[in-house]
Structures are given as C-alpha cells and as structure tokens.
Length: 469
Image 1 (tube, rainbow, N blue to C red):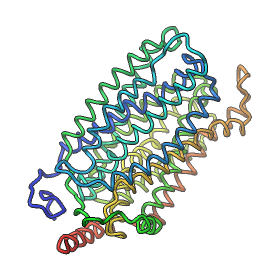
Image 2 (image 1 turned 60 degrees about the horizontal axis):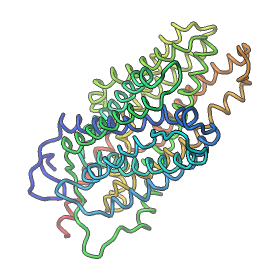
Image 3 (image 1 turned 90 degrees about the vertical axis):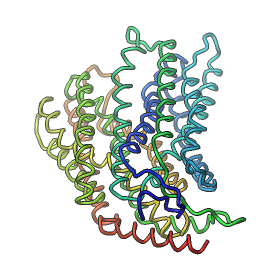
Image 4 (image 1 turned 30 degrees about the vertical axis):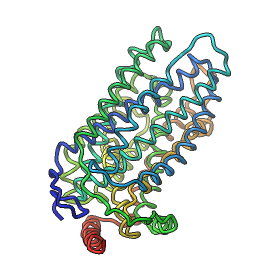
C-alpha cells in the first residue's frame, strides 16, 4: 500500500509522511506537558502553601483523581472508537474540540480567592483538579491513539515516538528551568505569579495543540461499519487477552515508569544527603535531558537497521549496566557519579524515546486479532495501566526511605542511611532495567521481522474487508 493513499481504499491523495508530521506530533506532547508538567511540578506546593491544604489531604486527592482518570481513559477511548471517520480523520477533530476547555481548566486550578474557608479551598481543589484530569484525558487519548494512523510504517512510528518524547523533554526543560525563577519570591510561591505562569503556559499549550492538528495527517482509516453494526465489547476483550505485545509492553512499561518515578524522587535525597549538594540535581536533570536530545538523531537509523524491540532491549541493558557500575564503585565522588551516570541515561533515553511506538504496534496487533480498528481503546488500556502504576508509585519513595531508616528530623543522616539511599538510587534501577531487558528479549513477540510481517498481513486483511463492503 502506498503511503500516498489512505488505507481505506479511497482515491483521495494525501501527502507522504514526513517532517511536517513529526513536528506536528512533537507539538502535541509539547502542549500536553505545558499543562501536565506544570501541574506535576507546582500544584502540590500551591495547594499546601497557598490554599493551606495539608499534604496528606493533597495526597488523597491525587490518589482519588488518578484512579478516576484511569477509568475515564478507558471510557473515553471506547467512545472515540465508536465515532465515525471525518474528512480530517477520527482523532484530530477531538484534539481541536477539547484543547480549549483543557487549557482553561489548567489555569483555573491556580486561581486563588483570598479569605475563603479551608473547606472551600479543598472542595475547589477537588472540582478543578478532577475536571482538569478528565479534560486532559479527552485530548491525550486521541493524541496518543493518532500515532497509529499517521503512518503504518514501523520506522515512521518509531520516529514519531522519538519526536513525541523530544516535545515532552523540551516542555520539561522550559518549565523546570524557567518557572521557578518567576513563581517563587523569597523562596515562597506567589499565588499571583503562579496564575500568570499558568495562563501563559495555557496559551502556549493551545497554540501547540493547534500546530499538532494542522501539521499532522491521519492516513490509515478503518472502513465504516455497516448500518446498525457496533463495536463488539466481548470480541475486544478476547483480543486484549490474546494481545501479547500489549500485555508484555504494559508490564515492561509499568516497571520502567515506577522505577523512573522512584529514581526522580530518591535523587533529591541522594544529592541532598549523600553528596550534600542539592543544587547538583539541576546538573543531573540537564544531563538526563541532554541524553534524550543527543540520542534522538540515532533513533531512526538504529530502528531501521535493528528493529524497535532490539533497540529498546539494548537500551535497557546499557541502562542496567550503567547503574550496576555506579553501585559497585565505593566512596564515589559527585563528578564521577555524574560522569558514569551518562551511560545509564543514554540507555534510559533510547527506551524512553521508543516506548510509544510499541503501543502503535499493539494497536495493529489488536486489529489483526479482531478485524476492527480500536486505536482509542487499546491506547486507553495502556494509559489506564500507566496511571494505576503512577498512583501506586507515589508511595514507593516513602517506603524506600522508611526501609533505609531515613530520619526527617535529623540535621544529617547516618552513614548507614546515606548508603541505603545510594543503594536504592543505583541497585534498584539496575535490577529493574535488567528485568525489562529480559521481558523484551524473551516475552515481547514483535521483533523486526515479525513487525514487518504484521504490516503485510494487515494490509492484506484491509484489502479483503474493503472488497467485502
């Protein structure tokens, strides 16, 4: 099938997949993370220091909202799959419709009305945060699902995954590097400045979403269902149970995400207590972002030569090895730690760049099993699992610190506690990344050859369905 034709067999010509699609897809996650990273970084401190809500109450809110998000992900994905194709595709119209309500809700969360009761602030936080989560789902599910229909080529999808990660990385750098300099005054968060920053990032997010809508093209379209024909939920569930690529990548991704979140949180204590240099965390963040950006040019050539599974597995092996080396170096200095860490971070970067492309292959495999295109449902299942994992991962750092004997009231930690923190920060990710490597090598079924064969099989099945209509 030519990339210049829509896969539903129409004679409508479309431009070939290219740089325009990559930039457009980058803009999508750029927009997502102008909202998501801002909320992840500043909302808790805003709630505790401005609204005066206790940290425990905020934690409960986040937990409740995250589980509700996981449910709405699946409901919205199923809803999207039940919609008809439009001349602009199935997913882009929903990004266009829902992005404005999303960015408005992003700003509303940071509105502070002085003089209200504690109950008002807590209720306001619940309503606006849960509303934001639902609206974020309404944009993120079609955005994530869209990668599977922009191109059917495995290498193109790997490229899209990399560009998506670059968008998120760029947004993270802008927010984490720039916003703290503005929103904090004398080390205290300013309610007015925080709202101003939220409005600015909301405007930027909306512009990015419009760029995503206008620069990308949906090339793969499912033939319209016959009148009265509906999605068969029972058939979908049977396909999901048999969808080995989805199940294995869910497990691998959950382990990766939970470890990544643990490392992000424990590193604060690692640099503050073990290395006694909290400011070094900024250097680590820059190195991590740099590893992603420097790895990007090599992603597509490596995937084209070796395949997604092979590149991702190699990345996890390198990451596991890097952290194991760090664990084995006694009395390590901060410069040596940062230098050796580059090894692990480059391996981490390759898996992080390519993870989203695995989801598009799982979507294709679901179509191969069921005969129906269910991009939204499969992506929503993946998003559901990620959010459940994130909800549970929130307590990992606390449990780890308790296990090593961390004393929050002590001016300095004992050497035993410091060594325990270092072990958690190095040995735990090493073991986990090696486990992910083993999952990819021995359990994930779609190597380069089988992925290419899946593309061929799907093209044949689509032609058969087109003739049958």
